[in-house]
Length: 262
Image (cartoon, rainbow, N blue to C red):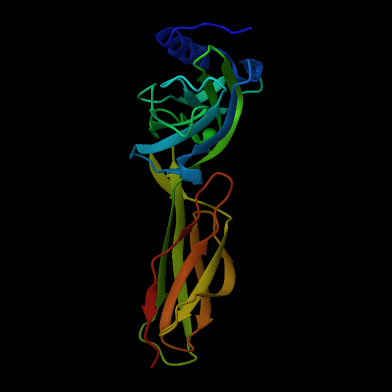
C-alpha cells in the first residue's frame, strides 16, 4: 500500500521524528520497493574536531525506486547514542533539508546534504567522541518511503597535536641526543588542549636525502602527555614523533626536527 505524503509535510515530519524519538526505539520503516543503496559521510573520512572551529561535511544518500526518487526527500540526520535507553545525544541535521540531488537514471537519485558540526554545541562533552550513527529518510515519486535507522556510521574524533625537539644540534656522530615532545588533544568540555597520557608514540627518523621515515622505538607519554627518550646520532636527518590515534582521537605526526651530525 502506498502512502501519499506532501513534500513539505514529509520533510517536517522527518525532522521532528529524528529530534524527538529515541534512537533505540526506531526500526527500519518502509513502504513499497524503495531502497537506500548507499550513504557516505564526509567522503568516507573521519570528522576531526578541535575546540573552536566549526566543521562542514557532507552526507551523500543514494536511493532507488521504480517510480524514481522525489527530489529533495532524502533527509539524513547524524547523532551519537550515549545513554543505555537510546536517547539521541549529540545531534546534527542538514542546514538545507532538500540537499542537492542528481538523477543517475529514471529510478536512482543521489542527494548531497551539507551539515555543520560545532565542538561547542553538538558534541556536548568528551563522551561523544567515537562512532556516530546516520539515520536517513527517503520518499519516492509514487509515495513509497523508507526510514533507515542505521544507514551509515561515521567517526567524530577529538583533534590531536604532537610536538618534537631533538637536541643538542649540531651533534657529533654516534653521540646521544635527547628527543622530547608532547601529545595533546582537544577537550570538548574545557575547550582547551590537554595532555594525552599513557599513549604509545613512535619516534621516527628519516635520513637526509631519503624519503621514508623509519621507526626507531616506541615511547609512552607520561602523566601530562609529555615524551622524552634518547637515541644515537648516526647521520644527518629528520626526527619526528608519530601517533597512530585511538577510537576517540585522531592520528597525528609532528613536524620534523632536523639534526646536523658532524
